[in-house]
Amino acid sequence: MDKIFSLSSMLNGPGVVFENENPPWLADFILKSGNLDTLAEFEPRLSDPGYAATTTFSNLEGNSLLFLMNLIPRKNHRNRYPNGLQQSYGDHNRLMMLGIDRLAAGDWNWLLSRSMFFKETFVCDLQDYVNSIRERLTADERLRKLVMLSASFHDYGKLYRRRYGLDSYDAAFLVQPILDRICATPEERAATVFCIRNHDIVEHVGNGAVPLQAVLASYRELSPKYQEVCWPALSMIQVAGAASLGNGRLTEMKLSLGKLLLTGEFAKQSTDHVIRLNRLIFPGMAPDDAKLLALSRSQLANHGLEQPEFVEFCNRVTIRNWNVLGLARADIEDSRIRKSFDAIEQLLQIWKGRKSYTDMILLNGNITTDAVKTGVTLSGDHFLTVGDSGEQSRQVA
Image (cartoon, rainbow, N blue to C red; front, side):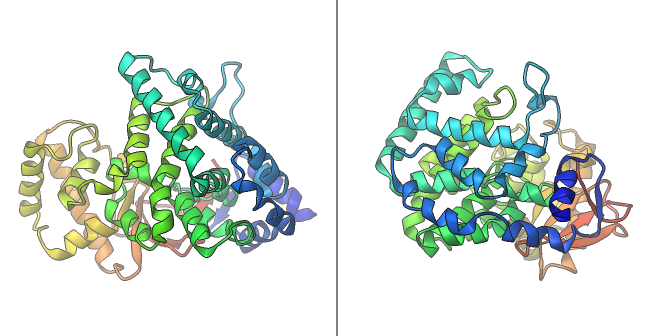
């Protein structure tokens, strides 16, 4: 009982710090909690086209630790309701599931009410998107079940209270006992884990933080039967998820990403390492622009970064929090571009000695080689934190 009160206090307390790693009992507590045997009874219902996403979530919330998401407030004013109340992750989850039900009903007006965009082109694109999604959901039992499960547990890693946006990696591990009971086949389970793990990552491909190659590598490990429904499921999580944030944050960019995933064009984007760098260094600009490509290739030559090892680095390594360096701007100013490639070269040197096990770098501040620490997610992903001059810790924000 003491642990339950400690967990509740931890989730709601603004200043809790765990040194080095979160306590081992916390992951174990989450893994073993919930009415796991009762959850198995829901599996047949998830295939029923009349079983609403909101009903699914209500049942899952009552039989797992999803209810504790109501104790975790979301950050900043954009997740605040007009009446001044701050949205919790529980609120966000329920609104997302309502958004999935509205998509299934073809209710594009509800999606529009959760957006600040009302241009005719946006409205037409939204209508087309909703109609396409409704047809897919009606026809495909695999997609219905996949999106309801992965959307319900997409933020489950928040219970572990780790910094750096690693919650999706932790969630993929913490949800395993639940999926063991509620997924009909190992192939379905693997697809659900893929969607949970990548629900934010697909967006980060667009800003260059994550190499598309890394996402496609895990995608290719899925059963072909589920490959074709993973992108539409992630599309719905992106669109319904944006509509469920605060007062509604469905933007043109989010809808464009949703369409890219729905059609499968997401996986057909260029995997060229220079284009990936351009997404990172020139936000908001066309990464395949001939002038930008020429600028970047010139910088790579000047920095001696044309070797195969650097290409491997670009195709493997996630770089999170690039904006903390103050270099991410939509311009072609010489000194900024040079400093950006200086930073990339420094990260390459830091990674070289750890390349056998590291696929992720998390930036905390200016890059210094004497402020590099290692960590590992619950799913076993090794990462480096760079630029943190203090003790490595996980702080509740």
